Amino acid sequence: MQPWALVIFGGILLVSVGVVLWRVASRQAQARRIPSPLRIAPAPLAPAHPIEAPKPPRSTPLLPAIEIPFDEPDDEDVDVTKVGALDAPIVQALTNLIIVDPQAAEPEGAAKAPYLLVSAAAQTDRGLRRKKNEDSVLAMPEPRVYAVADGMGGYAGGEIASELAVRTLEHAFRTNEIFGSLHEGMEPAASQLAQAVQQANVAILETAHRDTQLMGMGTTVVACKFSPSARRLFVAHVGDSRLYRMRGGALVQLTKDHTLGEFGAAGPTAALLSRAVGIRPLMPIDVLYLAPEPSDRYLLCSDGLTKMVDDAQIAEAIVEGEDPSAIVALLIDKANASGGKDNITVVLISVLASS
Ligand code: CA
Image (cartoon, rainbow, N blue to C red; front, side, top):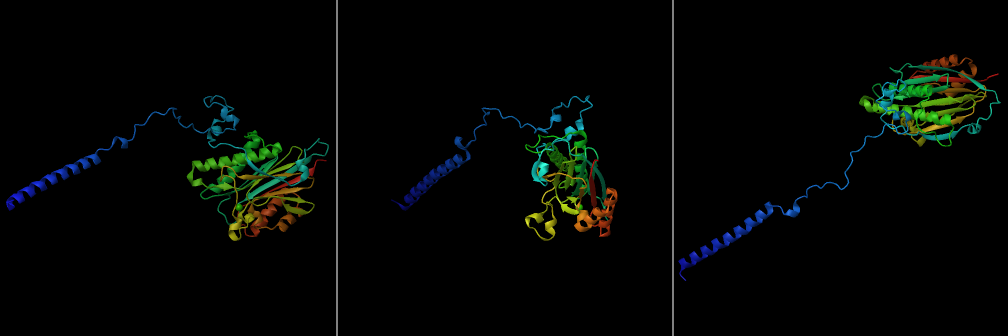
């Protein structure tokens, strides 16, 4: 074969191979561009069972008043604003029962023993170092409910939380609007007291939820309620505000501070609260059963007193004093004389035989 013929034949061969390769490559590219039917997501099918839109949570499953239709504003007995404001469910309080006096766990029995009388004095003071008073106090001569709350939280949170706590307790016992079922095996009065504290918890949480500046606010609560004969005293307690009893010249702290110290923390952290009202939907509430006796004196106070005045000085003021108001004023003076570094709140209750 002539060399020129070889060149022509080789050129034709190269062109043919090139054309074949180009066609194969372009087919492959086309195959990549067109997705296989298997790769196409199937069109969404209607579900066999229609999915229901989530229902808004019921406001208060245990709250009988919520069952009252809101479209009946003519009923003046219905506090629609209050009921409607309760967004969080009111659930039964979590309680930790502590029988201080064994006879307090027994039924009161027939009222043969003399009924006891109760007189009380209460006072709250800003102290000397704080700009505001974040403590709140409650003294209801009837139905003999007393409470101290020591609030915390930035902005105005502390004072709002403690005030909400005592206002909720006051409202609950003035109107008997105490929601939720009674605790099984617990004295009804004790169960209601714990439930009222739980209602305060919900009120604080809701208020903080509506105003982000108040988020994280909370309060201590030490609250007590006498039975009608005053031969039983029930206490609900969360935080480090305290209840003391003076009996036979001895002052005894009956509540245990709920601080990190009880879990072994040392130094400044030991004083931090391990539980408070208004922080979480549920917190354990210590419930104490007491059996008052004539001449007992019960002291409720915030830590603004106990950080400044030691137990011996408190005992001395109570033993030497007569009038509850004078003793309360003296204790506040003593706390301020020692520096008044915190808000000071004191309630003193005297128990007397009726005849
Ligand atoms: Ca305090």
